[in-house]
Structure formats: structure tokens, C-alpha cells
Length: 170
Image (cartoon, helix red, strand yellow):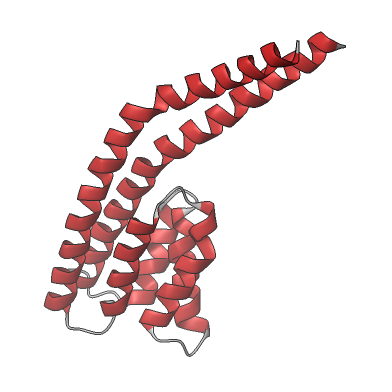
């Protein structure tokens, strides 16, 4: 019975480490997806003359979860409610935020983007998207560095912590 408990503790500690490592590796991927989505949004708005709600709907069909949910919710709120683009973006971001691996710095950047989306002409929208893309690029580099630096360490420490607990119990 002791061995079964020890194995259970080791498995749980390994699983916790794997989940934390997954969050570290998901963060740069999700930032990259948001960056590519914003680039596509820029092209749709500036060159395609597509309305914002239609651009967001198209993006939601092409992106993987949870990022597609951001644009699907944004499009839905723009078409089905009386919310302006800023409020719809803010609410959409709040709805999907718990499902992402993003940090508060990315949230602040995306909220800042939401303050200006849909309020200006095409040229100003393009400039705002480019500013947001630059900020997200820096965040992506930081996230990638954190993943490289801490990924293996977290997994190893969690396994070692589980082993320490098992040794203390025996």
C-alpha cells in the first residue's frame, strides 16, 4: 500500500510539473497566434475594406482555441449587442482570459489595443495595430526566453519535490 501511495505522489508531482511547463510553452504560441491574427486583421481592414465584425468572424474560423474564441466573441458582441468596439473587445478578452496562458502584461497590451479599435480611420487603425504588434513581439521574445530557461527546471523540481515527499513519508 505504501508503494501505491508513493507512486501516486510521484505521478501527481510529475503531472503538476508537466502542466506548469505546458503553460510556459503555450504562452509564446498564443502570443504568436494573436500577432498573426492582428496582422490578418490589419490586412482585412486596410486592404480588404472589410467591416470589423466580419474580419473578426473570419479570423475566428481560422484560428485554434482559445484565441479563436476571442475573435468569435468579439464578432458576436459587435453584431448582436449595442456595445461599441472597445467594450466588446474588453468583454471578449475577459471571457477567454482564464483559458489562456497569457500574463497580465499581454492583457494590458490587448486592452490598450481595444481602447482604439474601431474608432479611427484605416491609416490610424493600421498604426495602432503595428504598435500593438511591436509590444507583443517583445512579449513573445520574453516568453520564449522564460520557456527555455525555466521549462526543464520546473519539471525537474516538481519531480524532485515529489521524491522528497516520498522519502520523508518512508
